[in-house]
Length: 153
Image (cartoon, rainbow, N blue to C red; front, side):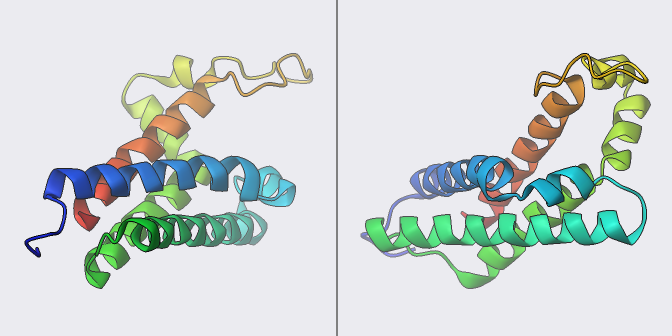
């Protein structure tokens, strides 16, 4: 660390803020409707849609980090950035494939919460973001954004 560089706490805070904003933008604005509709489907259709989403998600995170570096003068080492973004990307892919996150919720005794707000079979009676699955998905992503920020900082 250079004498005039920010300390590790400030670096972590800047990196986490950048990753958090990138997460919100990439998950809700950059992701295409096709990716959102298909990323949890079984087989190659789901895998490809999820991989495409994770690719644009990771590029959005990289752009956010570059913007912070360009505007603040923050200097980050390349390898921690690569590893941190890889942790974020892999964990995001796992969560967005749906089944692993559902199985984790079941294993931890949160299956009912995961299913909260899910439309009943044959009905479309809760078309909203207000589901347990969405809440668990977002908290899973944030945990790994925190881990990625720690690695990068």
